[in-house]
Amino acid sequence: MATEQDDRKDEGLSRALQLHARYRGKVQTMPKVPVRGLEDFATWYTPGVAEPCRAIAANIDDVFTYTNRANTVAIVSDGSRVLGLGNIGPEAGLPVMEGKALLFKLLGGVDAFPLCIRARDPSDIVRAVEMIEPSFGGINLEDIAQPKCFSVLDEARRRVSIPVWHDDQQGTATVVLAGLLAALDVAGKAVDRVRIVLFGAGAANVATYRLLAAYGVNPQAIVVCDSAGILHSGRSDIEANSVQFADKWKICRESNGDRRQGAPEAALRGADVCVAFSRPGPDVLKPEWLATMARDAILFACANPVPEIWPDRAHAAGVRIVATGRSDFPNQINNSLVFPGIFRGVLDVRARTISDRMAIAAAHELLAAAKERGLGAERLLPTMDDWKVAARVAAATGSAAVAEGLAAHPLTREESEKLALSKIAAARAAAERLTADL
Image 1 (cartoon, one colour):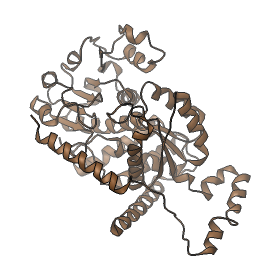
Image 2: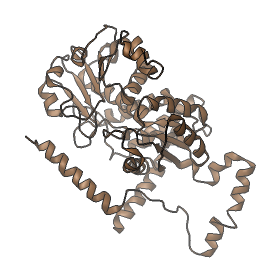
Image 3: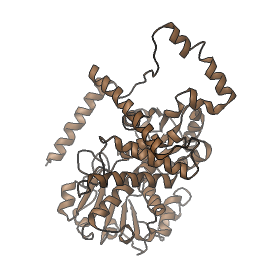
């Protein structure tokens, strides 16, 4: 029998399809300089354009002064794992990348360009990133299947001198850390005294595991499950493929201090937290499993477009705090809360990379903003419409880059936040004018 939530889902999807067709996509490019006549063309194109070309040829770093490179990000995807839809290819993944570009602009003031590529293997993606580096200030990898997403990220970061970020990994992990710290605050639990289950061992949860460990969480207090069950040192299937699945084998060897084995329900017994990034539900997580979790349990059911279990069923099973990846339920855990601000910050200070310390600084700032507004069981994090939070995240990220010596253009925290506010406000004002003209 269809539920009210199912009906709402179907209605929203139908409307989304109609509007995408109406506008023929979501993004476009627009000039940023005045063009009043032939004289202006002569300035912005030939012959005037030759002067910045000569300047850049003499000093390559001047490209950040005389072009828009310092405000640009390439959104690179091969379409091999798009949302919960799987390997649908680069063309079918393009609507997601356009949506990402929309969020980059409205929430970060960043000019982002969707680049869906036909790549045969991981080396093709890395090579594509290398080849486009001269035109961009940063690279956002998106919707690339595991395990190749891990090697692509690591290799691309080694080969280029601009920040490379895989949002499905690092962005998701950053917002999960912020949301988890908020939820633990509400539940009155300490991060160093809880048992955490990561349900699903794909890009999102592997990166979450990495960032939790970098934050100081004891890996022994974390249990990770994949489709075959609990990860532990006796998983010969993973050991046999340890080169291909190096991160999963590392998790097998250093996590799960209780040495639990078996199906996911064995992991959830007595757990304080479950962070799920597995497959679209709503019947992936069973209520009877959640009922065995600890008192005041926390569940992040983040599969898109449908969570692993509907929030009302999770609450009925005894879970106190529930978050999902969707904006139409309380407590959206979505990387859109961090990636626009993080890239705004790293672009403005011209950071060479995005480190774990920078991601943790962004998570702390997101948490601080949430605390100022008042935490609650249904108020863990700010929402996307609170755009000034992105400027705070930018400032925190930029400051962390400066502190680590990773910034080529250091700014103070105050300078970074002021610059971010002005750029985001300008982008939103332009979008409002566009809306007014429709």
